[in-house]
Length: 419
Ligand code: LLP
Image 1 (cartoon, rainbow, N blue to C red):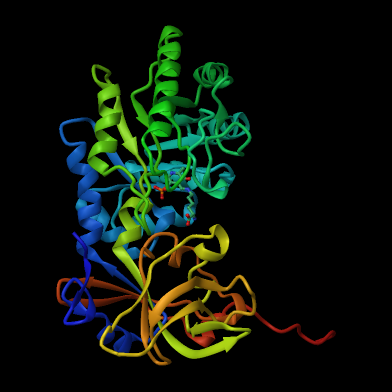
Image 2: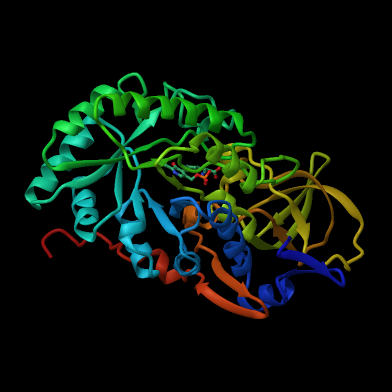
């Protein structure tokens, strides 16, 4: 089901006309569908029903409090990579004991605060981190629950910047070293081994890399069991892709089914950390065409959203569908590069798009709910966009557009010497 669909030629989010949203809140603006978030989460929860599981939404994909709140209420756990993300989860009503802490560079203060909050598990990425967690847990007279993030050396066949499970990536612990490091962990008095973790990359569109990784990790679990190191859960990370254009990722049910088939007969809780497959198609970015111009025979639609609002096209060469919100404009069709106001040639949302548009029109960038706002910045001193959540016929402003004053908050001029 699409939560963004045309009615009488105008794009709606659930029951709400997106032209109305642009008029009320201005552009650029991110718009999320609550129903889409819930249904995307439920796809995982239903596929896993009857099995011990925890779906830990990857907060980095979209960390708006309202998004986290909707998912927490639906029953989600969370995957965090910083203490800032944990603060958000807690502020949104999520619980630390359903939250796993991933990331290759956890700082001592972050480990300390996560331990105090009662984090479900630290996904440990190096021996040095393991020892630090042991020391901090000792100071707190407790045992820290951990899994080791294993790097299984599997090629996810995704963009190189979002592939994480290859030997040469910075992530995880080489699968060849894993038994030795687990044995070390087992000997540390303030560490409690509870799981094995692995995440191989993002926007995967086929099952085989997941299955390869799973099989390698299951063999490791067996080798550990032979050494009396028994884990309670297997965390397979996130990574399931979505359709932005013509990609055909397996549906969640098929993906989860393939995993469960290989887990049959094992007493393991399955943890997954989906981000994109929950949030991407639950959100769009609205932007207004400021100018149309032509240079060297190339037509440009200059819009008010830029790479600071949505960096994926510039950073990963990502293709996002761009369509007019109102198709009733009857403008002549042209082939446009849709570009923003930022002073970089890489500042584009899409190139060579056939669009029937004119200045003043509102465009919709689809598939923008994940890694959109959460990767946005103030580059070129641009306030970050508003975020709006649609719920049926209701609209909620869930993050106000930043003001110009917000841009300089915390900064100050040098005081004159001697004053
Ligand atoms: N777990 C871990 C440990 C991760 O590193 C990630 C994503 C996830 C879960 C969630 O993966 P997902 O289900 O969303 O694929 N900014 C990039 C994507 C970076 C993904 C980083 N890690 C993009 O816009 O394509």
